[in-house]
Length: 505
Image (cartoon, rainbow, N blue to C red; front, side, top):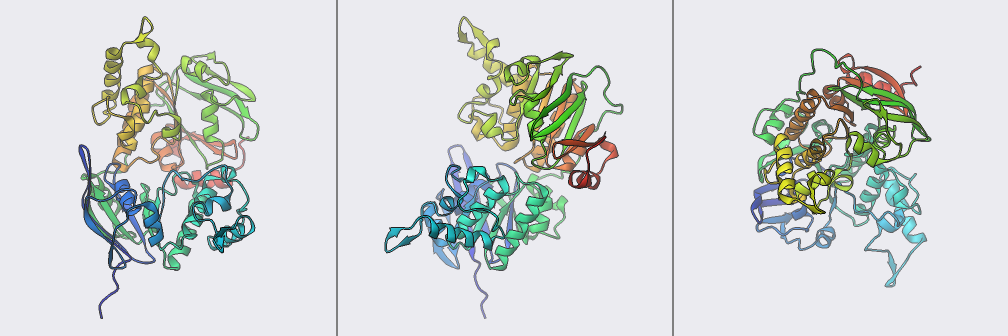
């Protein structure tokens, strides 16, 4: 007896854009009820492939089959009608609408041809949220008031409102803390038990092993491996397939002796009500200090307050022994503080501008000549800064939006390198960055520290904090519960502290 065809089969998919062949004969098949993980470095073709699957791009050649029958997905709505929903990393929810309105956006419930609002929409939404194990989310609440994890659930509810059979999840855990990731995995397990298939994209290989059934690896627009068992394929093999070389999770060597000298950055009793308690630290030249803690523990708020983007209720920040005006980004930048924020696309980069303009934007006054910008000097300085960080492609004229995640982050770092900052604040520096590019960023950060920069690092990934930092502060509910040299800590100890620790005396 012939076996059933896959739920989804993509064969020989190609897609070219001006100057680049994004997909070069990719094959992918997904079975009902499985979690099929799609891996690859930034620029490998993952985003293009899922946009073809979502109906946002039309393939140049190739065939898509749904339950064995050829289909043409001419639009996202056509894909949705077929039963394919895509939840992108940057959720497309409308913050000023309610949960129920977002769930039914574009396909409001009707009776006798008339749109039915209010009670019916809320009842349908409640049923979907209960199915996802989240009856606690109120259908009438505005989406903008929800946490990142709750918004993720609302996106899934919207997908299920279309009776979908396949959900594509692009980096769904990027903004979630460990407990929220565990809950996400429970939701995914419940969906697959009902026969819903999931295509799961993540740079976190430990997640792939936990949640995945099979793995397809893309490299340079080609599928270099298909259908690998997610739970038993060695990490080294997966990384080698992704990068074309053998990459270890190895961090740059720390200095043999801890950095000495007078602190470059001093934070004294800094506090914001409801966000973090009085907080103090010192960072010396050449030192990387890491802050570990769950999402919501106050980590990012501390960095933004040091940078002047938030005004503290009390305390002060000093650079080189001199206090800077609180709540002033301009004062912080003038003092030599630079920030690479968590959401680099929304908070740091001018996505439609060139790499040159993104790198020079904080230093434009140095290129001013009689009220005009000396473009040649600007380009020359930007090129020197990007070359120092090995940013690719080596062409500062290209729009920054065309760069991979790792190279976009390098553009942000190049901005502060050009500015000559003395203190670098890094908030989730490798979010959305692939394995190979992470290693490069780690090396860049360590080299900048070795050249005398003081670095304050925040990351959700405990191994990253422990591997890159010289000294670690563990934060829980806005309070420091432990401080120690990184070499004296391990992941289990840090997780115990952030989950169960009590404020340090």
